[in-house]
Structure formats: structure tokens, C-alpha cells
Image 1 (cartoon, rainbow, N blue to C red):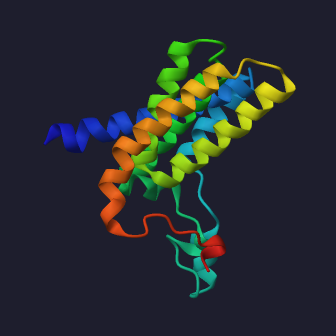
Image 2 (image 1 turned 180 degrees about the horizontal axis):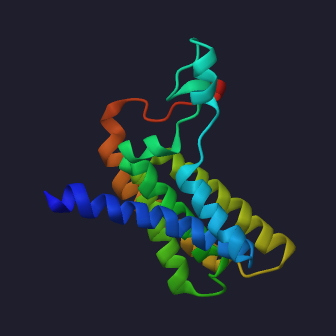
Length: 178
């Protein structure tokens, strides 16, 4: 019981915050900026609770189509996949020519696609754009990116599709909630 209700949420919160901290540390060397990113990652909210005081058509918790950051803890897969995505970005920027790092990033990518498929799609697209940038513009070696995508693809095939094949349409494209 302690593991599920005390330790696991603490681990998830630390993963979420450390992911944002590492990402902010890569972008800026200013400590104030890094601490601001962590603060806003945990406590940023939309204006819908304030707007709901004046208008009854917008709810306080899910108004304007935005999930409040404090409500993310209700779905641990969102927090965990966000932390994994930020860790993946950190490792990707520090990958260099290391094949071991490419395999680790591929494993994270495959696990993330099973955990939260839409975050996995965002990660695949982000890594694809980054790989194109590195290979075409910076003339880096393509081999680590091929290894990364291969490991991620195989792990996704082994985990996501067997578990979700019988559910029919597991991916739904619905832009602007239409």
C-alpha cells in the first residue's frame, strides 16, 4: 500500500520535474530560468478557473480544452511518458556517435509508445526531424539513428500491437476535437 500511494507518486513527480530540469539546463545556463521552468511545470494553470467565476459555460477544471497540470497526476501514464520524453530528448542531444546510447534511446522510445501512444508518435516525429537535421545539415553519421529507430520499432511491434490489435481502431485522428 505504501508503494502504490506514497512511493510511486513521489517517483513519478521526481521524474516529471527532473525531466523539465534537464531540458531547461540544456537550453539555458541561468539558474533562475531553470527554477522557473520547474515551477511552471508543476504549478502552471490555464485561465479557465478564473473565467469560470464569470461564465457558467466554461468549467473550472477542463475549460478551454486544456487539462490542468495538477490533474495530470490522476493519469500516471501522462506524467511518466512526459518524463520519459524529456529524458529521451536529453539523451538524444548527448548521443553523439554512441551505439549504446542509441539502443537506450530506442528502448525508451519503444516503451513510451506502449505506455502512451500519442506521446510515442510525438517522440518518433521529434526524433525523425532531429535525425534529418543532423544527417542532412550537419552531415552526421546516419547509423546511430537507424539503430535507434530499429530498436524502437521492434519494441513497439512486440509490445503495442499485440496488446491493442483486437481493440479495432486504436489510433484516432481528430484535429481540433472535431
